[in-house]
Structures are given as C-alpha cells and as structure tokens.
Length: 403
Image 1: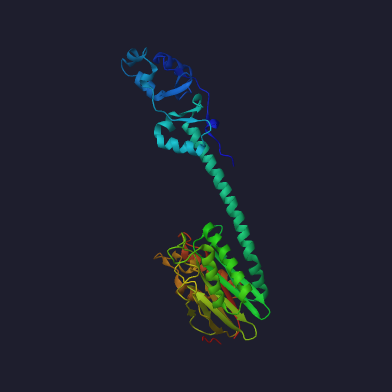
Image 2 (image 1 turned 90 degrees about the vertical axis):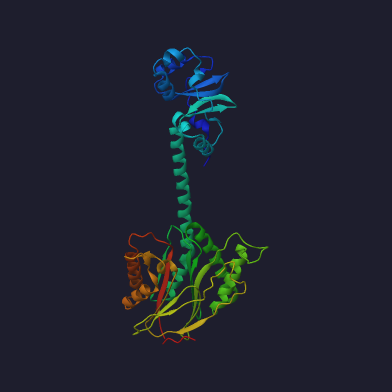
C-alpha cells in the first residue's frame, strides 16, 4: 500500500500577509465562518498561523479591538506553527503533530511545496486519515495471518489423515490461542508401526508459528535420516538442528539474540509387539489401564529442545510401555495444564486432567476429547486463554510395564 502524504490533506484557504492589520484578519474570519486558522505569509512563505479561537477571544476583551485593530496581524500570531512539505508521509506527520502539542490538533498545520504555502491541514482530518491507515494495516496483517493459518493447517493435515488411517480410536485436539500457534503435531505410518510427536514451541501467535516450521522441518529431516524406531535419538537430532538453524549456542562468540526451543513427546508404536516407546522433554505422558483407579503419569526430562542452555549433544532416554486392551494413553501441551481458572484462579493442573480422564474413560476417543475440552473451558470461565492448547490421546492394546 502506497503511503499517502501531507498533500492529501492540503486545503486551499484565504491567507494574509504580515503587513496587514487585525482589522483585515477580523474581516477574513467574518467572511469565512468555517475557517479555523488563518495563515500569515511573507512572499508566499508561511511565517505564522492565527487561531480563530485565540484571536476572537483577545479581540472581544474590553478595549482590545480599539487597541489592536490597526496593529499588525502578527500580534496574535503563533510564530512557531507546524509546517511540513507536501511529500511528508502521514505517519511522519502524525508523529510531528503529537510532538508539537495540542495546538496542531486544534488549529491545524501548514503545508508547503519547497517552502511555498500550498494549503492548510486539519488536525481532525489528520486523525481520520491515520485511523483509516491503521485500519487498513490491521486488515492487511490479519489477512496475512489468516493465510498463514491456512498454510499451518495444511502442514498439519497430512499427519491428521495418517492418524485417522492408522488408529481406529484416537483424538487430536489442536487449538491455537490466536489464529496461528506455536504447538504442532506429527504422525507418520510405517510398515511396522507408527510414529507420533506432540510439541509446544516457544511463544504463540506468529512467532510461535514461525518456530513450528523450523521444528517440524527438523523433525522430518531427522526421521528421514535415522528412522522412527528410536524417539530419543530423533529428539537429539531435532535439538541439534534447531540450535544450528537459530544459532543458539552457549558460547560468547556465538551467543544468539534468541533463546527459543520446544517441549515435546515423541512416540514409536511397534505393531508386532504392541509396545510403545517414547521420549519426552518436559511433557508428561498419561496412561490409564483398564480397571485401574488411578492414571499413571510419566514425566519427561526437564530439558527442552533447542534452547541455548540445552547442550548440543543432549541425550534423552527412551521408555517402553506395553499396553493392554482398552488402555488410554494421552499427552498434552501445557496450554491445558497451566490454564488459569476456577473459583480460586489457579492452574487447571495435571490432577484435574487425570480426573477428567478417569471420568470419561469409557467414551470413544472423539467424545473423550470433547468432554476434556468442555471441562477445561468451563474451568477457564471468563479468564483469557493463556496459551496454545494441544493434546493427543488414543486407545491401544497390551498390560503396562515400564522399563
């Protein structure tokens, strides 16, 4: 969008020269009732501005008309009005108007072309144009963000399709706090099983979404190079790749301006043995066995991926879980766990999430997901959503052993 300039606000108005007296000014204001201010010129160049309000107020005082009517019009002239060239951008003009004070918004400003007076600008017209410009900028930004959302959802759609083809009873909830978000997921089928990942990148909105592109690309590259069977190794490769792309190394010579990364949980399901191998970075894995009265929680390593203080050679560990028929497995980003709400305005927390799993354990995963979200939103109440929210749950076979 081409930036409009001060020329768009220039209005042709009467003017007086510095040689004319206040009687002339009074006459001009009388003939032009709409005139807020009167420019004073010398050889076509503006030297001051006479405000109608100030002038009329002074001339209405006792004996002032008799005293000043025949004196030079500069007596009540503002000698330091705002004067701008025709090619001054509206944004720059707005900043100058604010800097010059209330008088510019009330009395206007003078617009010149190479020093020659071309017209008077109104503070009100300037405000209207700035509001219109900001509205247009907001529209363009939102249009860009909306399209970015289309791209982000398209990036995730292949994983959602693969999940629906591989798992008969699964649920995937992905709700960015804003139009785009910093959470992402990945699901991929293989001949001998499937790989899944849920990740929470630093931030939300546009910065978070931008980071998901880097993280997702790093994950796909790691899977292509090393395969899906060792989630901990994949996690280590993603960590190294993200640190390299972002230049995030804990050395004085290479210290990055950013310190961004992600929490994540990576899964490998072996179809032949019905075993689940997972590696986790600051993201819990929740398992509910058939008939169990409690949900088991497996907390991940306390080190996230990609951050400056995360070592380049950081090694996460795998844990293996054997699932029995009807077992429910779930992992979630902290958007649901950390959400403030309830009568005490405290976090939703892992315990409420575990209780919700117990209460809805017999439902199909699609309904299970809806119930979890309903409970979370009811708990949130009137509180603002704090973060992006993603969780992945599924029901598989096999008794649990952790080793």
